[in-house]
Image (cartoon, rainbow, N blue to C red; front, side, top):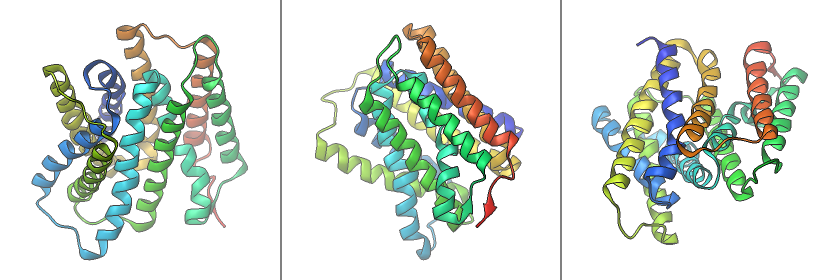
Length: 283
């Protein structure tokens, strides 16, 4: 499969996460996140059959917490409390967060054009959050922003630290760290359903295997084949897919102000990716 096709398939599948969360899964975000992480970690580690070098143990705990633990937990809180398209739009802000954080973390100073792209994205977010025709849950917004921020920091640390040779092991061990953390949080909070029906079980299997294990492999293969910069704009397929699914299956249509805000966020992301590729200059 060509790299860009693989990336497109992965991002479209991620857009299904939100509709599956509200229609097929128990409304226990920490439990769902733990099952997602564990269900994806096990097959990846079975395929990799590799331990990471000792010098990576601490790093993998940090990366697993940021890229999977916090990310999954906050993502499912947002998915439960927000319309799918809105939650997915906040997830797509990760590249803009990375622009701002690259300066203090990596020493790369954003140009004025990059800062303008971030400001434009912030305006779009404000329009989505403003009430318009439909109110937005602010706790859901905070969770969505927190998940995007968490994975942005994790991505920058991967850029700073690099990664071990085995991509499957690198991904699988991060997911396993998250599975342990999220399981402990779910037990501590009592965020465990009293029972599961067949729909719940099917939904959990889809989220863990199709929307995590398979998509992570497709995404990382795409990065290896085409480069992160070339496929980053395909992240926009996730909120677009989520909006379409929300409209078809739940009859949830954004207000005109929210639709305009989503459009502005998309424009800011495209602008950041295509117009100003060389905007980061070493300090």
